[in-house]
Length: 103
Image (cartoon, rainbow, N blue to C red; front, side, top):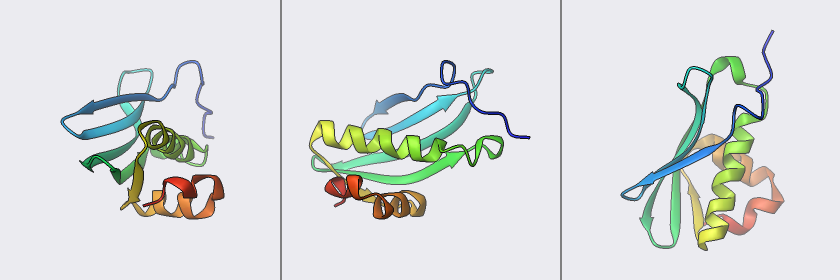
């Protein structure tokens, strides 16, 4: 049986360095258990290229939460998202509220 993540423990964090960034979640052992990565190739876009959620956490909307975090970042920075990751592309295409950030 899959364990539900503890929202108090499993918070989405962000890091960015030299135009590359990621939103991620750390497990109890400090290991990254889920992440979404992007690059800022231009001042106007975030190219989202990868999403990963550990197998034992799949099916719990963690990937969606990571996409939401990137969408919020794009909005805050006035940028558009170029979804190279198939998962991100699918989520954005299925979520009308996210269409405003689609490049």
